[in-house]
Image (tube, rainbow, N blue to C red; front, side):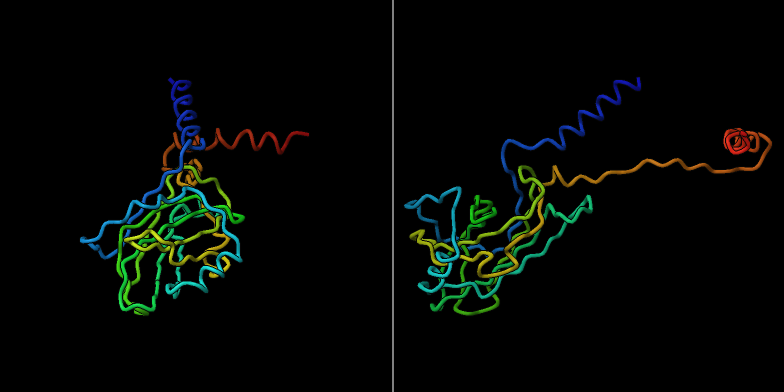
Length: 222
């Protein structure tokens, strides 16, 4: 029975460690719902992006929308290797207008190449208020090997899908070189150990003596 059990355990470990064919995430979005607005389908969002520092600075300078701040916190690292499989992302977006309905797209990548990670529902922002922040609790489930990632966030108009502003490592250091990995790489290992409890009695003394005898013979061998 030992051999089949060992084979099953090995197969399970290989399944958990194998790279997935597609990226998969789970997001808990803390966003005030705007029920009377539907996003326009005029402009499909790209699944990948290439962004340079010059493009980022140009977009920020020409927009009536901007990021007041972005907070990122790594929240789960099960194997304690310094790379997290979950993180919390909080956004505070401001505008020159008294109120505006927008949505955000979050990308993950490196070296200016990004892949879309999550698209929020529509939410409302109010001028330069700090009470309209949104928070995304993101779990990377599969498809993200262990390495440092950069994060790109884009803000779109809810009606026209026009890009209003975006933020990346060139604008906020918190969005660059974040140590991440998906959950199938964030596996906690348990090291087995032998615990011997000594209870009194002649049998226990004989058992302990039998364990120590090879050590005694080894140390006294000429």
